[in-house]
Length: 447
Image 1 (cartoon, rainbow, N blue to C red):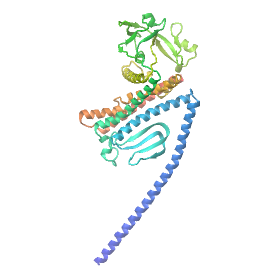
Image 2 (cartoon, rainbow, N blue to C red):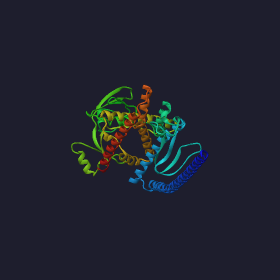
Image 3 (cartoon, rainbow, N blue to C red):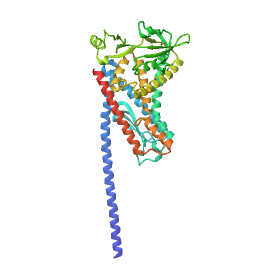
Image 4 (tube, rainbow, N blue to C red):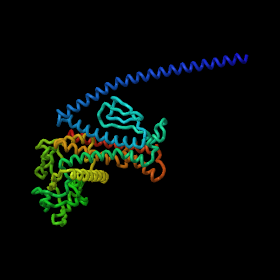
């Protein structure tokens, strides 16, 4: 009886095994069928997305070639500029992550639905092309914290040495700076040069002429700020000045120094190629000038006139191009830092900032002066993006760098939840600021 029971038990076990195998085969067939259907659906969507991408590219080319100066043309140019800057930034993060053998899930060119993708041999990263040709992105494993149980620790950024994590984070900003230097170098080859703060001429019957400033004088300080270029002088002159008295310290051609206190004249400057000026006085008020010339709010700006003109002589050659690129790069960085500090101290208002809508207006105005000026604007925006991104503010690359530096100083990692909350708050504040700036830009544009 015992033997019979044993045989029965063995038969039941065999039967169970057969049923398990059958179930597994059924599951495998089901999974295989599901994967096949998913693949087929992806292929169909890929074709649709490819058609969408092709249509967008053709439309973009047509707009650029045949609709120059129109609203559509300006929007397309702005989007192309931002796309290049975003792509270069993300490429920097990607290259450094790959160098330190951090797992990158995907590196994408463009945004939106996927057109097609592929993987290289012995490379787990998915490389994809997306339907909307706007910038790109990459997804890095463990960028802020351990977010994947399937990967080994050495494949995640959060477990890499601090110096490697820092380099990955600053790589995007570095690429933006390198792009700006390349573009500025190209502009330098056309004869552009960094203008020193030397006055080439003084307009007659202006506050500067009445004060006694003459051509050849070099401005060394304005309201306490050290001046070394005409571009930096222009930004300092825009800072809030309650007294409306501008203190210029100049160096005469004989080497002597003199200080002038000048009260500028107010004027309306039209946003045209000539930069037409209409002086404001008791008889010709701002309201009267605007009404008389039928100007809208987005077509002019109220400005202050001193009456000095900068000296800018074209210089050519590779040496000049290098000199111009690095000097102008440094001037723009200093200008950006001055603007940021002035925003916090109240010397510049939020009205001085521009969001996407305001940038559209800048592109429209810049395009009037030719292609080289659009290239310069791209370089300026690239530096702008780099400086803003490296600020030690949560949600920016600089915010992530700040937490690593805190970890380096204290020897302890910042609490994961606390860090994530800080980045979330930072993102919300930035988003709210962008909405406010965009709202102000729209009011100026339609006004």
